[in-house]
Structures are given as C-alpha cells and as structure tokens.
Image (cartoon, rainbow, N blue to C red; front, side, top):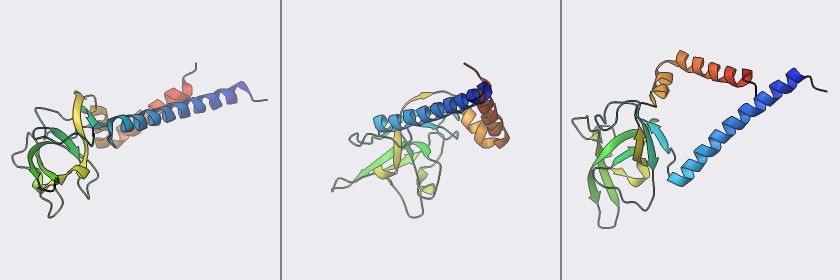
Length: 170
C-alpha cells in the first residue's frame, strides 16, 4: 500500500504531465487549423513599428490557396537562420509559368530585406513563409523576450512554475 505522501506526489507528477500533453495537443491542433508550422509568434525587434512593437504576440495562418499580396505582413524563414522574421510584402514578381516571388521590408527599416536573404537570393518564395499575421495581442510576448535575454529569469520562472505544480494540492 502506498503512503498518502507518495500517492500525492505521483498524482501531482501525473497532473503536470497532463498539463504538458494538453498544451502540446492544443499547439498541434492550432497548426492543423491555421496551416502554419508556428501559429503564434512573438515580435522580437522594432523593425515593424509602428504596426507591431517588440513583444507583440502575432496569430498566423498560412493557407496554401490564399495568394500573397503587397502590403500583407508575413513571417518567413531564411535558410541558415533559426529565428523567423516578421516583415511586410513590398513587391510581388509573378512569372509567366505562375511562380510567385516577393520582396519584403520592415516598416521601420530604410531598405528592403535583400540584405537579410541568403547569399544570391533576391526574392522570397511561398515555401519560405511560416504564416501571415491575422491578429495580435500587444506586448504579451515580452515574457518570452525576457526569458531569452535573461536566462536566469527563465530558470526562475520555470522553477516557480514547477514548484507551484508540485506543491499545489487539489
């Protein structure tokens, strides 16, 4: 027979596992519904001000059937870079065979993004797009930025959350 203390610890660990697995299922569900590999992103720089500020949380969709338009805000990845970029579509170049390429620029930047693209790349393609901004919540992602900029803060938050889950009794 298990003592009540061991049973309680087992229950709390199981509860924590349920919370983590629920969050992962919600994330995967959002990926399917939005068509985006990353349906929620945080703006990490001021390059899109005044439209979006550092720390804004963006909600993305990436439906294949929707054409990309000039003026639309897209989140894209560049080969060799880990972090996606949030910028506005500046120009579209459509070839006769139907291939569409486009050029982006941050609203707060003085030049287009060709300097950010990989060597020899002058245009982005649909395959580079992670998603398109469909909505946002201002500054709510600042916690993510703080955790990236200050690793000790990240560990403190994670320890506090873990401690809360283990100590909290229902």
